[in-house]
Length: 398
Image 1 (cartoon, rainbow, N blue to C red):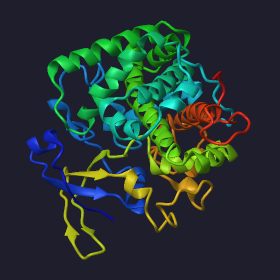
Image 2 (image 1 turned 135 degrees about the vertical axis):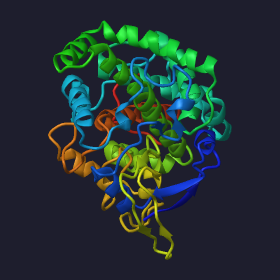
Image 3 (image 1 turned 120 degrees about the horizontal axis):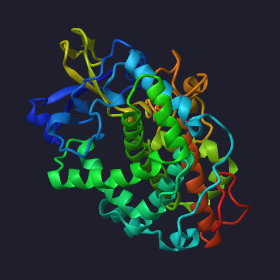
């Protein structure tokens, strides 16, 4: 069900004497946490950082208590999710592929000629050129779909934002000057969004429901820059790194069923690791399979790990094999609740079958599928992966 998880990399948690904590990493344990309204969320935490350790600019500008901090099913948690679901129609489930908007100068064939061992090993650490191409394509389309705005002129800034922001998520110190830079970048993008049709309607509706409209929109932009851009960009980029290791095998497999391929890719390379902290609301006892007994007290923290749950052999036979349309494939937890359960909900606000699924699930999947398809077509065009018709998961010019 879980284990004691040492925290050597989170300076923030170590500073507050969280030397180890239970981690729920099996499929059943992770699912239980994300479905249990009694599984609280710590108000003072942002993933592996304490909010008090983060400089101004890392969290939303107008309110520091973010959606992740609220217990499942509480009025505040449900209300914020309902507003997002009602006012951002691009989040709704649809089978329609995304019609990609291509950044100026983006060229899938050039990308294909650039991929190789050096990029796959060094690019993620140094923020390589090819990684930026993928993130630019994903980011431009996430914001175009979600808010109806073109952020082309801010793509360089956003890539810088993500490289600075990500360490704070895992508890690495973020300096004050870095927080200020994050705030400045986010302010530019927020200014564009709040005057758009979708942004103005979002503000107006939030105020009708009793909130400060700009505060709620500001949080949503923060979410999109964090989970939408960073999470979806990571899924697309890691999937492409996987494909180029053996394009003769994986390009035809992608083209056969892009959506099924990307669902399996999301199981292997989740948009986010699902490492959200949990706050026990009452004294609890966990008896592990090896006989170890954990006795967390009310208020103690625990973690969840979707990357572990997605590899649980009790649910996914041959979990490390890449098998699109595998049995139980829709049980992956990369977006926090099982996909088939989340699909049964009337809206992305959630329902009892999936009360804490990421509201961006379907948009993330659609944009990542289209982005991967765009670059897969580039591999074909460059003669690196067979031939065939243009990918069904992509729309845009090479």
